[in-house]
Amino acid sequence: MAQHTQPEPAEPSIVEANRAVLGRFAFDDSRDFEDAKRGFLGTAADPLIKDGERTVWDLEAYGFLSGECPDSVNPSLWRQSRLVSDHGLFEVTEGIYQVRGFDLSNMTLVEGERGVLVIDPLISAETAAAGLALYRAHRGERPVTGVLYTHSHVDHFGGVRGVVPDGAEVPIIAPEGFLEHAVSENVYAGTAMGRRAAYMYGAALPKGPRGQLGAGLGQTTSTGTVTLIPPNLHITRTGQEETVDDIRMVFQLTPGTEAPAELNIFFPDRAALCMAENATHNLHNLLTLRGAQVRDPHVWSRYLTEAITLFGADTEVAFASHHWPVRGSERVIAFLSEQRDLYGYLHDQTLRMLNTGLTGPEAAELMQIPPSLERAWHTHGYYGSVSHNTKAIYQRYLGWFDGNPAHLWQHPPVQAATRYVDFMGGAEQVLAKARESFTAGDYRWVAEVVNHVVFADPDNADARTLQAAALEQLGYGSENGTWRNFYLMGALELRDGAVGTPTETASPDMVAALTLDQLFDSLAIRIDGPNSWDASLTIRWILREQDRPITLRLHNGVLTHTAGEGPAVAAPDLIVTLDEADLRTVLLGTADLDDLVASGKAEMTGNPKAVRELLGHLTAPDPDFAIVTP
Image (cartoon, rainbow, N blue to C red; front, side, top):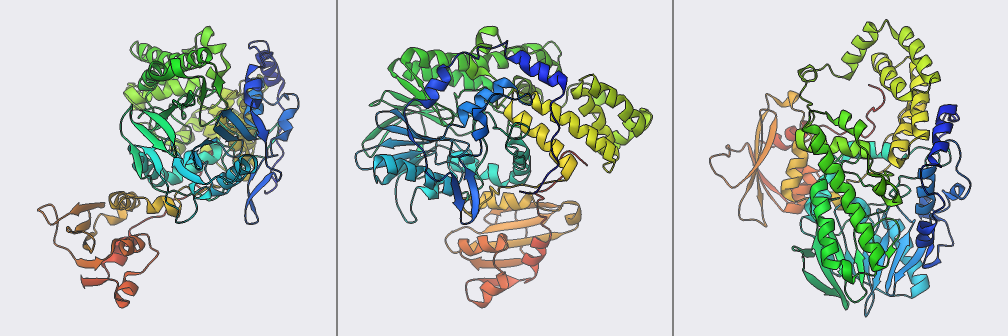
């Protein structure tokens, strides 16, 4: 990793605030540490998981967490990171094992009659393969007889080719709608999400007390090969039962909770309940900081009630796709009930406040979790937060506009910043006052006001230095792992420049899983609208595998696609006959249509330049766009 500017120490006000946290919560409660270590069987001998010469995961990177909490870390976050950094193979209950600490998520292995069912094979093929090897080292060379994706986020399917050999045919189970949501999330807005995810997980931060030490839900994301094998067995209803390799499963569909396609699983023969990512040892995100569609806390809460009703009395151990299990029927029900009440309280109280006229930031500042819930460690905002979840609920119901007409047509950031700085007497005057605020410990205000100077003049070194210092202190005081990472990444990039996006989620497997509709939609997103206003192109694709042609039309700066030849379809400039696989290569730019025609793989009639002209109207996304500067 490149050398970066050394971070500054924690300021006295942050040190004092962090020490005050020690008196607020039950740090002498060791039950989570006992639960997290229970069932430990061993870990990998080699701490480095590699893709060739490149390290994609280092099991020893967080060894520093064994020490005392330093002044530069919120003690609550330090505690959570210590718990989450435990790595190895753990027995959950008889016949169910988890590989933890090998990626952001857990990989669960359920033993069947002949082999093992793999649940949620991590982000990268390399980490998943290492996890499977660890399991086999302790439990024998059992074949993988099935795979189950609990939901549509990449940390729960990306490593599948690390556990399923090429050409192997096994059941791949997923909730209804999984593939559509999995590929659209990682392709449509994938570049923007990936760039922001670099901030969310602190991708470029050095690991240590003044850098990255976790993300609350897990430590960070692996950087190996993202893969995908489409499911071949879909769960379409709650109560659906399936048996794979003599493993009986009863499913509960939970769409719209932590993911748009998600499910919980009860194993009746093991009295075990897999809660996917619907109940973990933290407050989860309703709107993740990397960006996503806002999740529904009301339905989330209701599905947790349903899980308690359906499975609570028969469950002796509950485990999830992150963190550690909860054991004992009484404790499981209490855990699920508190998680249920947490999301229900946030939802209902935000609605109550917005109906009194409070805006999202106002409601977030006033929102307080009931003391009885806050005393439970698993309700703390290590990944989601009370603040940004409250704003997300406001956004879900009322959108970006707070009703104040002064906010209806504001200047964009750079233009507004220039005017603010001018109104405030110029950059030097702003920085002088901001330094006084920094000395007083008002880092929130420093970050807000100096941001205007940075956006008005991004080359102002004094402004960047002060802004970085304020963000750094906010990070040191944060209980939330992803807030800490965002603050510290902002400080790093202000000091050293942009670091880009470390992981490409729109991998070949992901793109190959796009339906043709999704592929056409992903191209439409990339059309340079203003430079295509006068373009008028129509291409008809005749696919040998289909009865109906597909017509692609660029007009008014919009790329549309239509099946058949109805009244909504213009006369084509070009007609191309080819196989669907070859069409995909042409649209993705990996093959040239002229070459396909020359080889006999395609036939065309009409304007031969039409495809090249169409592709010329596409823009490329920027994985290194600015975040803390204009």
